[in-house]
Amino acid sequence: MHYDEIHPGRSRNLPPVIVLAGGAARHPSYLGDLAGLGSRYRLIVPHLRGVGRSPGSPVAEVGSFWRQAEDLERLREHLGLDRVLLVGHSAGTRLAIAYAAQFARGLAGMVLITPPAGYLVDTPSDANEVIARRRGEPAFDAAVAASEAGPDLSNDDVFHAWQQRAAPMGYAAWGAAEQAHAMIGRWDLAAAKAYFSVEPPGDLAARVGALAAPVLVIAGADDCLTGLEPVKALATRFPAGRVEVIARCGHYPWLEQPSTFRHAIDAFLDEWESAEKEPRANS
Image 1 (cartoon, rainbow, N blue to C red):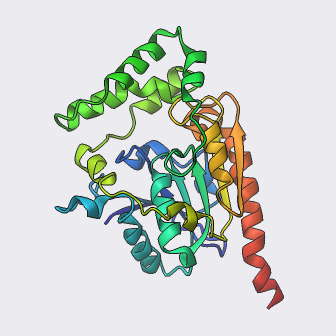
Image 2 (image 1 turned 90 degrees about the horizontal axis):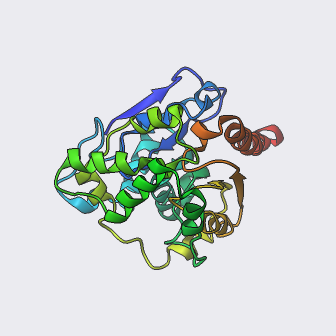
């Protein structure tokens, strides 16, 4: 399995941050360095199974988000870390939560960026209301039509092309920066299918409710893909969870509202760093 390192020499006596891409099965290059987060931390960015430079598995369930938690545990061991800090985006948050549910002792904390939440909360989605506010923009309306028609699963090329046609739904605005960003990072069809090939266990919500690690959920107020209310509700599932809602923002807050995104994540990491240092200070 392959992973990229961003600023590999940066340590500050703190563990690196492991960053999980979404898509599902999109090449992680679309994450960039998360609005400069790599200037603060060493970022470890895995290529998930079947994506980029990591091979897939002939057994689909091995590439599921539930089973790839085992890959993260092996990565933790490989890096020589007692615990890991996970930052997941979109479908990558499913993997982060799967790791937390199975390897809670190895989790130091999580940041969940615009996570899908319907599989963990009962709060009705308000995505249709968010979509209705954007209607009338030609590129957006065409993206909604593509999304409603569903993906073409014939091969990688047509699947990737469908993702790009639907891309304007992911942003609160469709300007030059958003259009350029939407072109970054191909999807892998086989890996995407494998990612959802295993259903999580029925007690997943109970496991989430027992987690002690701190969790920050970052939501886009104009995220048509997840809606807002279910994402806010997800934060309440974690005993040490909290939510930050970013205005005028869709599914990619580090690109759409980078300053606000960094303010939210940096405040969380400041608290996490203080908590990590406290036991050493008292020892």
